Amino acid sequence: PTFMPYIFFGISTGKGISFKLQYYLSNFLNTDYKTTVNGMSTAPYAGYNVHLLLFSIGHSFHYHEYKNKVTPPEETKIAGL
Image (cartoon, rainbow, N blue to C red):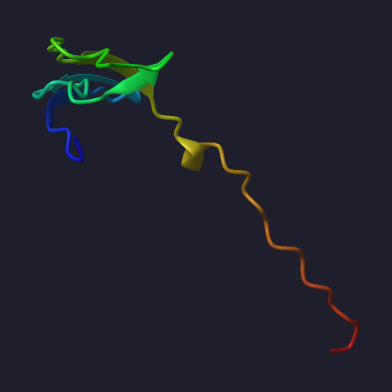
């Protein structure tokens, strides 16, 4: 299928850790898929009804907190100017 609808629920903590639960509503396998092996046509996914449930954990690195702070170079002063 060209469109795989899913629903998800996610939560993120203040420390940058996130959790996500994702569920695919339709059959994940293409039951119409056919292949030919040794001259015989087979449909390996026919009869399967597979719905995926995924759980993921992530961590957000706060790069803006670790940037090297560049200080502007000091101005060169010429005596008398």
